[in-house]
Image (cartoon, rainbow, N blue to C red; front, side):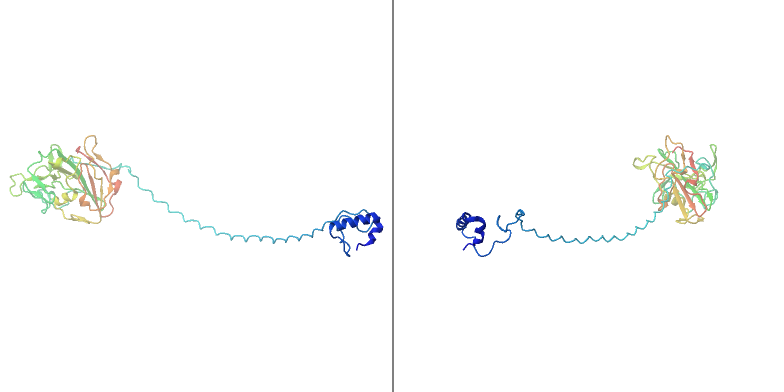
Length: 335
């Protein structure tokens, strides 16, 4: 049943029309009044214009949760600076490859000079101290001596083309010692002036028959200058740029007693300098070997090869010149 309260306002026509519409819509009646705000019209009259339909109020949005402020990052611990590295020690500069040659001292050799104190060894030549020791080369002619089989010949005139010269010098506790003349001769006569050259030993005699000449080994000395003459028929085409004998061969032929700490009557720590395994004589050279070529020899010094213009210094004991402070050597012979 439709409430008639609404017909007093709308009139009979409106009531009939309303009924028709309601019937057509299939419902709409009921005892409950419409919910406020439902539909587009109706409601209690008012002098104020009906406000437009008010939508369902949007609920007050839930406020965003206040974000927890980011914690300030824990500052990294201050790093301990690495320790300053200990600077490496400044390396000791290498010695100059070619030190200045000795500008104050040059010894000439091979022309009758006496380099050092003479006649201090035990050779049994005609002049005391000269020549070989009794255990050294004593001939006879045609024999050979030592492991190197050094021949002893009547003369040296036919021994070219191999004819070279080396130098052996000695210092003992600061004093230069002369190498004897007549080493490698069986048996040498006293030295003399020979063709204008002083202090020269040029002849030998047979110790068993002094009216007969003795012999010359292919390695020998003529004066106390330190020059060693090597004259040979070279084997296998050896040229004068090659080497035939060693320092040990010479010492053995001389017969001087020696150890790693003594030579003849002189004993002490032996330090050896040499000019290298190279021939420094020959055409185009001036015959002088400067002390800038000298090198300390490490090893068995008896094995030093004797090249043309090889220089060997044997320092025995303390207080001797060393290295480039040793004398330069000026050879009289081209080779």
